[in-house]
Length: 185
Image (cartoon, rainbow, N blue to C red; front, side, top):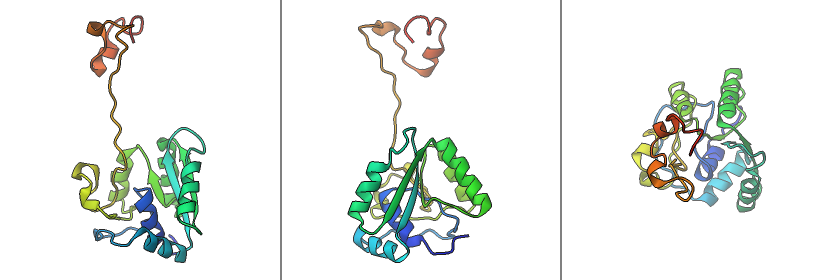
């Protein structure tokens, strides 16, 4: 599907913005990356020096500062971070894979189920960056097909000056309690 080998470009990208998606499946788990960022940069330049990232988010051009920083750190590279809701990026990726014309090199999405599916379909390029072993097992695929770059925790917070502490919601079902919308929710 891809005309050029983008593995070194993807390697550089994964070091900066994992996880990644590619139409070229890899059958065996890779070794942990040992090249420096500068070595990866040189290799990426020799492969064309282009990087396209699909990043989940709801603010257009939210990736512009990251693009600028990336291109300053890695001169000669052309980087584009396209921000949209994950549910739109995953559909976009599925359509591109079906058409045989994948446009992104890296996908940073909240729709985690997509990565399991894409791995099962053979659509992910495995990559294990430097310090792979420092990533907790529950936050990575053992074969290096994908891994977390952040963990978001959701919690209940209540202003006890407005809502008596005893009445404040503690768990998700509390928000469904009768009268919730009319009182403290």
